[in-house]
Length: 112
Image (tube, helix red, strand yellow):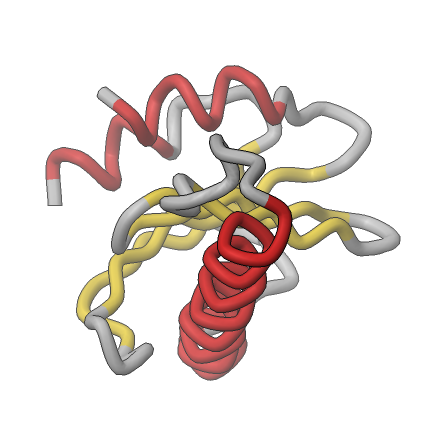
């Protein structure tokens, strides 16, 4: 849970979460007053796993067809919404408010 606590210190963080390879939500923290709940984070976890899987397939296919390298493996996933952005790397993610969040800082924190 300490890792999630450190993600919650990022500017604009409203939630941090961890999930399995199948997209099942394992643990989470949500900022007080955030318009986010466990159900949304569970769905977001499944969305992230699905999108990372699709992006991996596309990256491998692109490298195989074109001979261009550097697309695979997929290191993370970002889902940008109207009010917030989810940044995921590995099996952890953080949800940031768009007006206060720093995507690059989130990737750095998730990589560490």
